[in-house]
Length: 252
Ligand code: GLP
Image 1 (tube, rainbow, N blue to C red):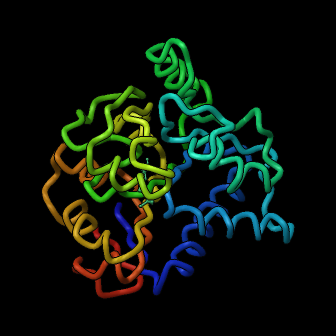
Image 2 (cartoon, protein in one colour):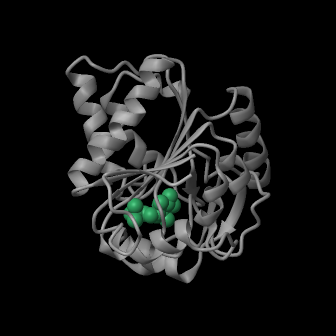
């Protein structure tokens, strides 16, 4: 089933998506959450922290696995995804840090790191809910256009468009790592629920192409059309080029 929530703006989007994650934690306190970085999920994490502080959420039994990490950045580097997650969520809620997992971009044996990340996900019993953002070229995690749908966690060379898009977060473009470790599409497709968030007019074309266009490896997110339980939460701007009229739509 594909369900789409249309939010007025980023704030409402963040609240709706945080609501879905909260429901997952409440229904299964020991759930495994697949988490994402990027600017899109920041509002969601802020909302979850707020509810935690009010006493409405308990992360003590939750485990997390993050989608991806840059190769060559360690946890103390502000641009690393481990740093991002600690700063935006893990340091602000009662999650056991030992239960939070981000691929290690500093591993000496990077191939081995990929294999053990897949084994880890397997040993946790799989991902209950995977949160995803959406790259301008349709990438999910760091699965770039052309990537096979069959892959588990692997090493990727980032595309020029992703390096350019992410350069805004670095002091200069040369500082953006050229490679990353990412969960593969196969890993993502095995999650029980996929929750994809997209915000802003600059995502309108790719949202339309990914979910109303044909399924092709040239638009990695398009494979999500085949997922058994995909929830898209997007704001009006991101849905402005898609045929969605109601605030809640079930596509199929
Ligand atoms: C990065 C991340 C993705 C993220 C994407 C979109 O490349 N690896 O996981 O979804 O950017 O980011 P944003 O939400 O900032 O548009």
